[in-house]
Image 1 (tube, helix red, strand yellow):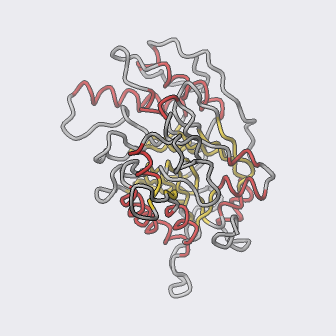
Image 2 (tube, helix red, strand yellow):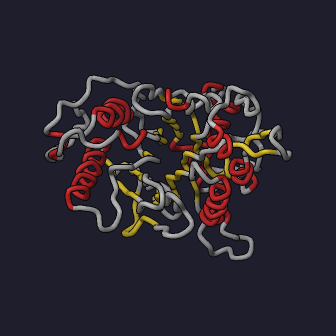
Length: 361
């Protein structure tokens, strides 16, 4: 059952269900920590089995796994049934709003959702009410370029209210690696705010950037996927994730890593790499996808879900956990624990920025 302890009435969709008996791992709640979660819950847990009843997988994910963590930020990359397109039927809109309200209730958070794009999914963000300050209009909306528009919210830490933190939930296109790269370049318009060209214009406001995404592309470095092996039977998937380096039927397939390289070039850093290198947590680099039955023939496990933080914010990372979502989703979730005192220092620029590519050099 729900244990978030709110006094207001539950949304109807939650009052009419029994909840879940699944118990996920917990983190001790401390005043000096912030918990950030990146979750790709397959198809948002699925459709309602009956009007007003949320699916079991939704309950397992939100009530069983997320709520005990008391997260401060949750980025969701498959908000399939929590958002609708313009002109959707009234019943569909009501179902989406029920689910969206229920998630906000369980997480005790402000919820945000981007518009649907060409893809069937949308993205969403939840910001815990007691943890961050929000402007009167904190969400930035995108209507062009993106197959699945990112959810972009500007939040501020109460101790450093003059520094905006741009947090984005991003779901890169699975089927078009060229658009994947183009969307990554579009994201650099937000990352550009981190430095804010303060050398030329000292009065400009500095900022932080956190981009949490399912990138549908592997990171730079050694790969365990044998793209040239007969084990890879999903030819279309291979064209999405790898590029042929030579012509002809026997050309050598090499995985695409351009998005990871671009983000490192512009000074963003994978929080999982930081935890592995600076916090002695090699498990932070465990795969997040490729384990579900539907991934058979796609080459094996991969780490396509990654949280990128700017060169100051990433140094506040204390811990990264890969949260096992087997039988709930086709992706594992990531739990990133930040030191609040260290983040305050990062936002104030009390220490040097981490150099680009420093975590893999």
